[in-house]
Length: 535
Image (cartoon, rainbow, N blue to C red; front, top):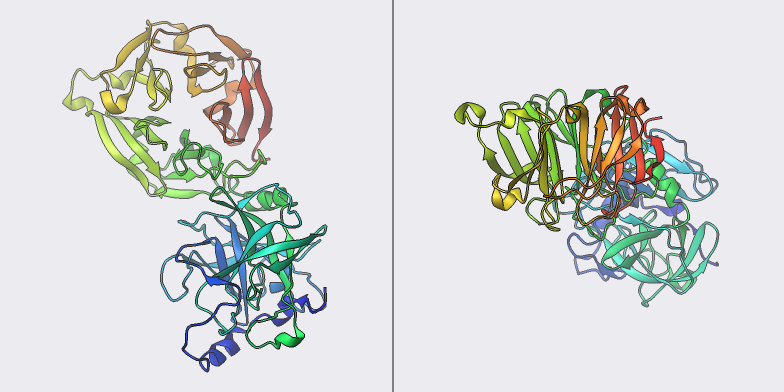
């Protein structure tokens, strides 16, 4: 491809650019790469300031990870793209979620680790803290095809600006595909990839969702500020990422679970707290954790296809010593019919609360269903030993609450959001056998009209009661025998952790030794695909 050369060899020097930019005309610029992006458009595109000497672009692929070009960090990219893994040699700052750099908003975070890919011009960059409020660009296994159209975005030069203050984008066509690269040409006469765009994303749009296909690597710079268009080309080449999505996911989500001390778990609940059911992002369910010190965290579900990386980050939603230390039993469900989940909480003083929604800012839409026991002597909720939430009442939009009491009886409260605790029915009378239940959880294991009830017994036996409804229980299936390792389960919860299909649930277990186990696609024949997440 004549006229193309490694772009990092001529990445804009910020110190020089700042001086020269002051000599430019104040007239509106005509962007070489197409058009200025509207506010908040393509917010997953980041700008990198590398030691105050280089400027690059990047793409947010996880809440704490960027993908960009290795040439941005190479000592001499004209000779070698080799980058040392670990802390960047010079201080690197990423600005994410700020389409217009002259305005506030978004996040400005330091890059603290580099993980290079050795077979192509690509490096993963870990941020010091997770980025909130910006949806990472999606990763998919769709192969890039010749003739396909892609968007290309970056913070590089335009035709008239050396240091633009705004993200720009344009449409390009894929001319050819090689094992690690893609050749591109602009769809419009002024479309080009310029200095400072190195590492920026090339991506497709699928039903309103963006999917990364490549990152900017080389360009002929034709039409860019400071170049002689008569001797330069507008052709560009990108590094492919569609064939290494598994590697990107494995890096981006590798340490999410290991960073927490799971021996300190007090309560677990799974649900769609940060993304609605059926959302285009196709993410897995989220996990809400209350720790023994009263702090609380949300682990948003990842869009990874690797079952070992079910969550994308940890977000603290409450500090140590918060009111969550008074929670006795919690369960999550869709109470308001809104598509996102909330919490049902029985507190240590026997007060019962419904939260209509839970997100990264905490629990919202609080409704007290029963006040403190001291204020209501007839309140028996201090005897509620185990609680789970599921579709037991047959309402496909709103979940119900199933309670196992201290005396071994079980009850169902349907549509608590509308009925409070008035939609009551007894499922079974007091029974000594049910006193041996140590964990219960609602699941979608058998494809019934209503949810199944998962029970883990004290002796290690684990059972599923399929299709529980207001009339009671309809059979029982043993999925693990007495004496099994499941007797060592500290806390368990069910959810769609390895896929986005709420109709087939997995089981996540916090073991007594602090490890985490994940069992996928549970059905009447037992559990399948068991893995230990922290090994």
